[in-house]
Length: 161
Image (cartoon, rainbow, N blue to C red; front, side, top):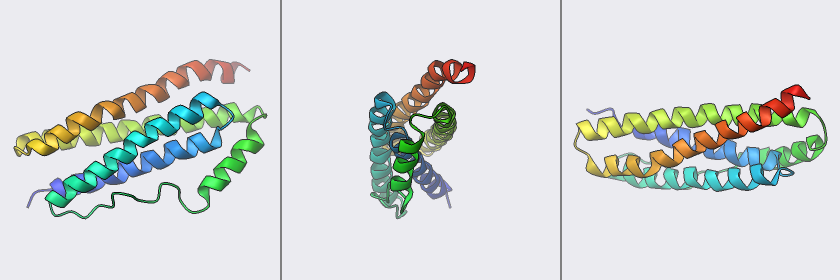
């Protein structure tokens, strides 16, 4: 039996986790409008990937939730309150760096998962999965680049202050 089901499950889990992290970052850094809006926008890409993976999973006998909870119970409100409390404190910059590093690492892992799926699908001649990876992986790479670019811009200001 093929391990394709495991790959689909792991990719679904990692995309869900990335979306949750991006939404938490947006909530924690509401005062930074660019972070807030862009993080929510790119989280939407992961949410769409999760939905599409659930559809693909059905075709391969894997039940995946197309609409998981995007905010863990209590975390969204807690993140907002923490963001409000830290917004005007020097530590808020360090928190932003930590959040962006976590998002970058997670997006890198998701990117690798898309590569694994694409390679396996190509070898198994599963064209719909090849196309799914070709559609979704570039957005994951953009999520990674966004976090990396923001780290480059923000880190000198935060660390030197």
